Image (cartoon, rainbow, N blue to C red; front, side, top):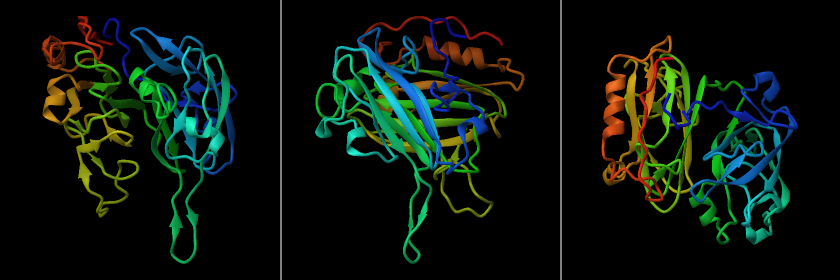
Length: 336
């Protein structure tokens, strides 16, 4: 494991009780359309480097914030505690809420410094309307973020790290073995640049879910080496004749999000596979990281350490993080 680096092997955070818990079972999460109301408390906290993150416990804020999961038909009540000296909020994409839970100053929906406020998000399954019309459900790969710090659109909060992934699943959806969130924010990946960009790890054959989110002022694309997915809601084809386009590169622009599932190393084997923005000067300036597929037993595959050494030894746009500070050196990735 890399010294001083948080390896991106986070399990999904699911509001299954008064206190959210990671890696909840399917029964704890509730079935699609169950109408379950879940309650969690989140904390907005200052982090080193003039950053701010969301967390599920005091002192546990991260960038990105915890991944929140719901099933279609469920409601999530979030008690947001603002421990900072800045006005902030939490605003979701893809789910339903009233004006009091909008998270925008336009509707007076935000937390003053030190204030606690509850936001309520609800979801629904597809609805059969008149004739052949169907209204969409809430299932998808969405996200949440601040909408109040530094102005009416939360631009300062986004720059400082107040964002995270929101997944709404439909009954029958596959749940992954590993789950990773990739946020292209300005010219950073999760507010970092190479060689500090997240290292994501999985073992050969595991079902891996990527949640990709865009923020900031620049247009990007997301490319994952050696893996491809169906350009639909889940990333998986629904049959051998499914005409959905299969891609390995997709636009990831401010405010957009998508997700997909792949089998780690399927057809290509284990190794150090790159992910990056395919706008060339963006990747040259550090918008690139590694998806490390280990052997099935968790050991490091042949050639992977050498590839990692090249990545960490390369000058990515001067080797600076998003605030211009010199990047730190890394120890080798160790055998598990």
